[in-house]
Image 1 (cartoon, rainbow, N blue to C red):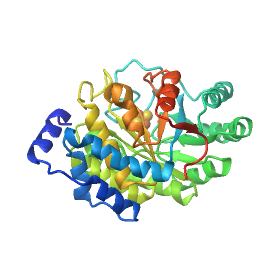
Image 2 (cartoon, rainbow, N blue to C red):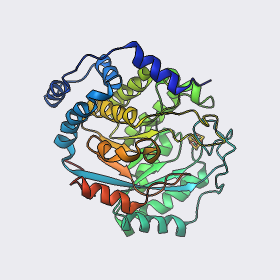
Image 3 (tube, protein in one colour):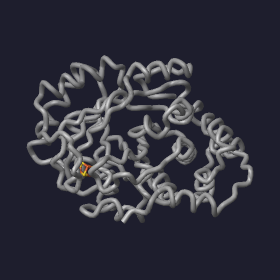
Length: 346
Ligand code: SF4
């Protein structure tokens, strides 16, 4: 059973009184090719609110070094909704969720193509094609193999496929049809994984990422903060992602949806979200870091500060929840003096 996040965070932060940390010196160390220790990463998550701007400025130096002022936009398409046999406790589409989400099998070609058109119009670099499943069946594999070349030829978008667990053969087939990248999130730390899912394991997820990597595709993998995990679990996930060499890290903040086992379970502050983003930037300085689901409800008016650390956001809606209007995102990027890019940062 997941513990209450509020309790976990306040226990952790009460037990350690922060000394003032020279985050600039830590940034210098990382910019010179050094790495933070796990203890330092934990200290970032325990940073007092009154040191937060100092932390963001230091993490922002890493962002600027590797990504300049660029912001990459991603567009999500829920190509198959509901109907999943897995029991991920945070997910509105799982078999243990009573949330009233749309339920449909993989969409037809026209709808998938139309979504690619919208992604292009919105300035997205990458079209994320997502299905709810333990892993793709043959019909779903064939549908993806057929649509991906068309999306790429017609709209010149990168395609990221999120299809669940993949064996090596499936990964090879995705690579062959033109998929650039596969998303498969680790979601939380290894030790905590059994608390949020019992139908597959953390090791299953890691193996899928290895299959993707060995097939020659990029790995997109991140997690969800606010599921009752300890701060150490978050650190553990950040280091596992580093060790796996993932190229892109989406960081979600739990949107605890009514009808899921994690209903009402989260109580993140905007500052908690910013500390987590900063820690991921320090541990994975050169990797794309995307502020993902839950940013509107947890970061709220502090979303722009998040972009001083992260370099990417989803534009539009999430899988089963609404996102901020795209125009507000474009305005935020402009107000920050940043620019939307469709190429990879320096
Ligand atoms: S496998 Fe994916 S779609 Fe299925 S319950 Fe887990 S997160 Fe949701």
